Length: 195
Image (cartoon, rainbow, N blue to C red; front, side, top):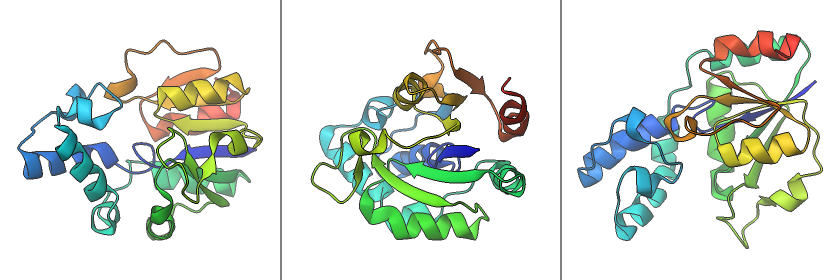
């Protein structure tokens, strides 16, 4: 079985850290549960200049290296690998984040068979990153994602998606083939039984 795992807000507690950073840098105090738009600049109500600075800051090694893993992620990933799953980590981070992402995964015991940096949202044109068009031929049995856009992209291609419950995806109606989850504790049973 080949399992796709997203990084930010699935394996790493990224947006909570981003909210704290925005509060410290820009005085924009927005509770995590109020961040109901996938686009950070809208959720945090940032000016274009602030949004540009935030995107530079949150892709810096110093920021990414401090992220905590999502509760239960490492234990679940270890269990899936022990059961013979092929773990494909897929992130929408920019290509310059590859080395740090690899080191972060290793540091927290998130063993994996591959790491792909995919331009999921059309942000890195011209950079050394996998396009969605090039990526669409990869096969996955199950995916764990937090993005509605990627969940839809994957379900259309026959992948069973476990959508990690986050404020920015709570209003979405899930397509068939997608199941909302609120913790890593639910993942093994859903993968084993397709439930």
